[in-house]
Image (cartoon, rainbow, N blue to C red; front, side, top):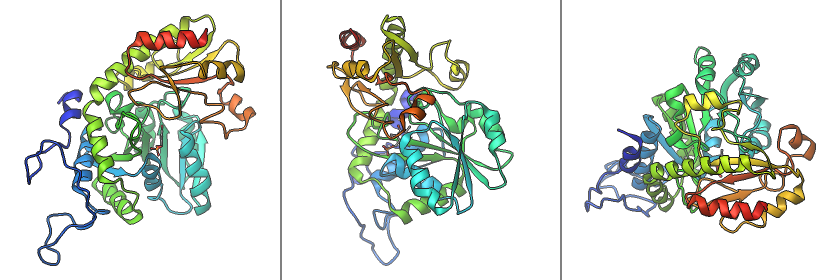
Length: 379
Ligand SMILES: *Cc1c(COP(=O)(O)O)cnc(C)c1O
C-alpha cells in the first residue's frame, strides 16, 4: 500500500459494538470480567485500552514495523528504551541530539550507572571507533535540530548489526512519510508524536516501533510497569492526526523548498540549513534515505547578533514565536535564547549554533503568505 492510503487506514477497524468508523475514545480505567480471568483482552487501562490498541497498530504500520507502543510523551518513549539497559552499559549517541534527550541521558540516567558517549554520527567511522565491550546501544537522530545534520542510517546499521547492538533512531524530524529507519536496519524507531504525527499542536505523545517480538515484549513490560501511557483522548487525537500525514507532509515539503530557496537569495540572510540544498554536506545521504527534504529550516542573519535575530522573531505575524514543530501552523524559534538556552554561549557557538540562528517549522499555510511575513520581518 502507498503511504497516503496507509496513513488513512492504519489501525482503522469499524468498532465491533456499533460499527463506528472512527475508533471511539474508550474513557475507562477498567473492564468487567465475566468470571475471574474471563475477559475480552482488556483488564486494566494502564496495560491495555482499545483506543490505544488501534493507535499502536497504526504506529507499527506507518513505520513498516510489526509492533508499535504509545507513551505519554516523546521523552517517556526514550525513557522506556534506556530502561532496557543495566548499570555499566554504554550508549553511543549523536553529539547534537534533541536537548530533552540529552538532559534525560545526562541528568537522569547517568546517576544509575549508564554511560553515554557523544560522537559526530554523521561520520560512521566515529561510531565504530567509540564501541567498547560495554556498548549495548547506538542512539541516532537524523536530521538533527537545528542544524539539519544527516546521519547515514544504513551505514550505522552495518556497524551495529554484526555486534548485536540495538540501533535506535529518533525519527521525529523526518516523520514516517519521509524516512523509515526500520527498513534501513534500525531496531527501534522513536517519535515525539507531539510533532508531525499529531500534527495539530494539541497533544503531547511519544511512540516506539519495532520488528523484534522479544524487544516488543521487553518494551511492553516497561510500558505497563512504569506506566507512562497516553490517555484515550490523546490516542484518538494522534490516530486522527496520522490520517492526514500524507497530505500535510507533501505541503510541508513544498513550502519548505520554496522558503529555503527564497531565504538563500535574501541579501540579509547568511547560511541556510535545509537538507535539500546540494551544497549541504549531508545532501547525498538525505537524497538516498529520505523521500523529500521536509519543512524544517534554520538560517543565520548576516548581522549575526542576538538583537538582529530578536527583531525578526518579534516581527512575524503568520509565524508564531514558539518552541515545538510539526504542526499545521508555522512556528519560528531562536535556539540561542529558547530551545538551546541552557548551553553556555561558547559551547553553543563551537557547535555551530550562532547568535542569530533562527529555526522555522514551516507549516501548511499558503507559501506566499509565509514569504510575505518573513520578508516584512527580515526587512
Ligand atoms: C520534541 C522532541 C522530542 C521529545 O518529545 P516530547 O513529546 O516533547 O516529549 C524528542 N526528540 C525530538 C527530535 C523532538 O523534536
